[in-house]
Figure 1 (cartoon, rainbow, N blue to C red):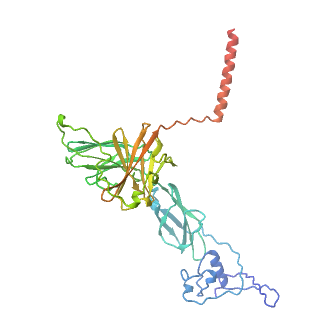
Figure 2: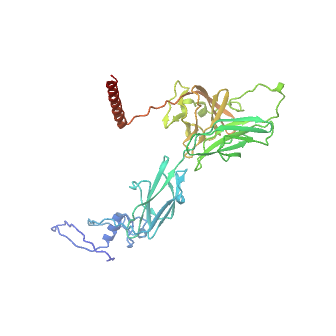
Figure 3: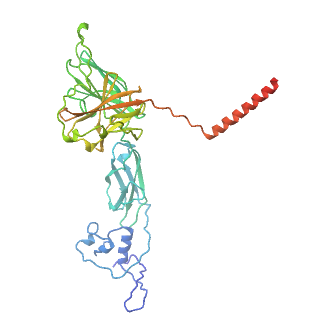
Length: 441
């Protein structure tokens, strides 16, 4: 029997005898104290599941006999804290930012055997788990500052003070470039575009392919990476169509869905033989083939349109009303489109030219997204969604209209104290004018 601890136990016995108080020293008290502190084992060689001991955490329950308690025992003792336990918690090796909800925690504590990790300081719904020095962890959704909390428990039941670490979650890429154009020349193509106004915009990366539009920043050949607004791609083969995708990215590596264009370099023709310019919408998309049922039923209503976190309702079944200068995000739920498909693109027709953008799957695989800047001129623009399969064959085209209006300037509100000052100044001015009038006469 372990006599390290002495406790006063109040026992009530009601078997034909008067109620009496019994003072006892018992090793069962150790078991109760351990359970109250959260320790699932007291290592006394007896399995006592009535106090929370299980085979998962306690060697006492390796086939031991179940011992049922016969007396109610009341113990009043607070859980001791051990603020002196050396401990630390680090998220992603002290990184300031992360682009993913999934992070790695580095943990350190001395003389402990359990830990608890939580995204909230109250540790609601969190259970103790075996101590380990590294752990994969998932942050709460939504961009912004994230805090992870941890506490540790020693074999004697002591619980450390809560520690924490923070990291900034940023999963939002910059807006795509706009007015992305390709002008063909002799063995060369001139690319031009306009950069987005996003404050965290860092640069543009342009990928090139002879097969089809590069679908991500690692697909194809990188031909440009910088903050400029034009690039001359030289040394190309005449008669070959080159596909380009421009990806904007921010300071921590979030890439936009991509703006696309293509062109065919060729030798200049004699002036009398130059044919009229024809701009196909969009460039060289293969003919439409019969789509699967899940694609055939898609309409413009399946897409969502957002500006400044406000969802834009679809009007008349085909029209989306937006404002200039505010980024427009277009999305469609991930489950609406089979993963076998390769490309979803949206094409905006402006002044006889076609500007196309890819919709890419986000990291959480909840939606296909694209963010673009609406045209500056207030008018109605034809809008076309094109869905392609893995062979770059057109499965479906969905048409609509993008109605752009000028962003209304919001009147500046005048503080209450400025209104009072203006009233006083106007009053003084009227008095001064009255005095001038008196002396004039």
